[in-house]
Image 1 (tube, rainbow, N blue to C red):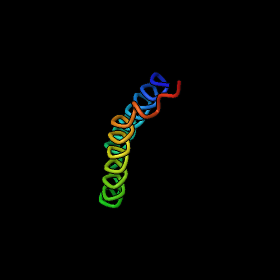
Image 2: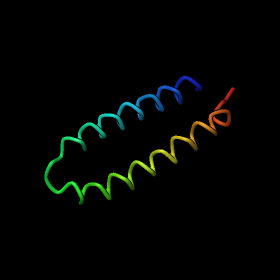
Image 3: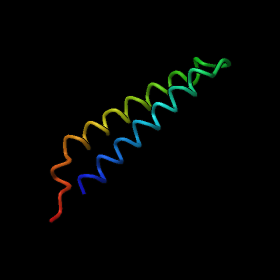
Image 4: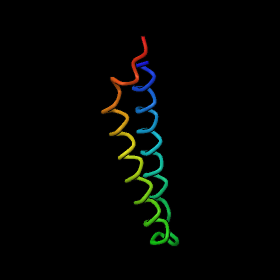
Length: 61
């Protein structure tokens, strides 16, 4: 189970890096996307830290 959590966190990190690159390419209405981008990245960061901190609780066996 530990590898599944680690893999999921690594995939989330890769997805967030892709989102960042896509966000940087947005030229039009960046201010609109900026607010939503900030809310999303903050929520994902909190979730990622929570999952990483709770990883030991996911061990079944």
